[in-house]
Amino acid sequence: MNELLELYAISTIQDGINWAEILDRQMCPYLQRVCGKTRKSTPNITIGSCSVTYGKENRRIIICPHRLLERGQIFLDCIHLLTLHEPGNELHVVPEVTIPGGSVDYFLASVRDDRVIDFVGVELQTLDTTGTVWPARQRFLQEQGITGISREADPAKSFGMNWKMTAKTILMQLNHKIQTFENVNKHLALVLQDYLLTYMQQAFQFEHVGDARLGDSMQFHAYMLAQAENVSFRLKLAERLSTDAAGVAACLGLQADPNVTLARIVKILREKISPETLLSPVLG
Image (cartoon, helix red, strand yellow):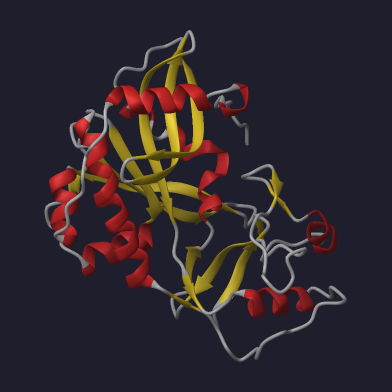
């Protein structure tokens, strides 16, 4: 049966966890605030589900995009795409930047003297589920002896993975955005899990998407969820691929309007950078 693997960023197979305290705090360490995922029926209770085990192979599947923010590693792995970045420049992580073609989850910007020198767009994509993970969450908490936990659905029912819709949706979004970045000679990186990238390679025309090259505007960074010695889990970069705008379009046969200028994006980033967006090293 498909099961919950991480709740509020804590491994469910780790011993000695005070789950009552975790439930009371409802904190997402990746966002450094209360988890933002709530149920419509109980908006005062957050869901907190980060990852699950799925299928006969018990594959570890990340289902929350914020899980990809662990230690800021995905941004560190994009620094080489800032070809104009120099030592001494500040690095800023700016969330939710709207450009022609859509909204980009994050921009990693190189800034000197309050001036944006370079930037790379970073999109996050995790798998959407079919059905809800809530029964698995409730079942786990009951097994931990947490009182007041009710099973609101048939415990025999399980969730699935919406592979096709997740992959098709993100490819369509990338197709609309990548021409914007290519027109201003910048990079867009899609951060996703290794399992999702493998599915995309099998279900879509990916033969032309090869090993990562700095000259390509579209970068794919695939991560695996590796188990650490203390049975917690950590992101580990598994594979990097790349292509250009034409290559993304070849996957779907779509086109996008690249009506944008470099100055326009720099202006948006300049207005959003602040001490709060400054990328600081995270130990551990």
